[in-house]
Image 1: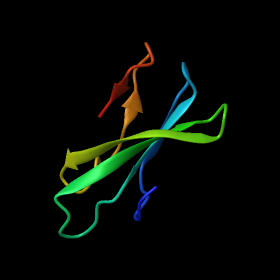
Image 2: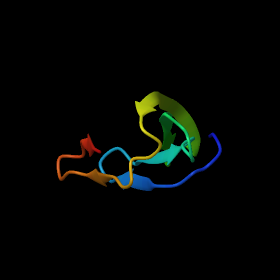
Image 3: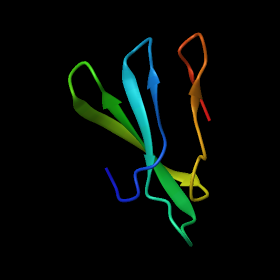
Image 4: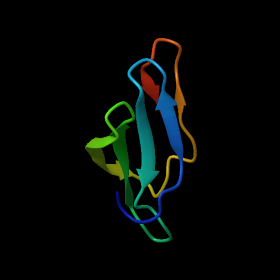
Length: 67
């Protein structure tokens, strides 16, 4: 994962942990990294998200990510 790890949230349905990083002062984008907590493996990133931070995340009851 990149520098500046900040917010994180666990999806209880698929056991993926979503972690926001890469923002910071002056940043125009940030990254959402996806960790499989069953395998303890980094499975992917959602790069180039606008702005420097999500400022918080939640998972809805159906297990779908919301930002």
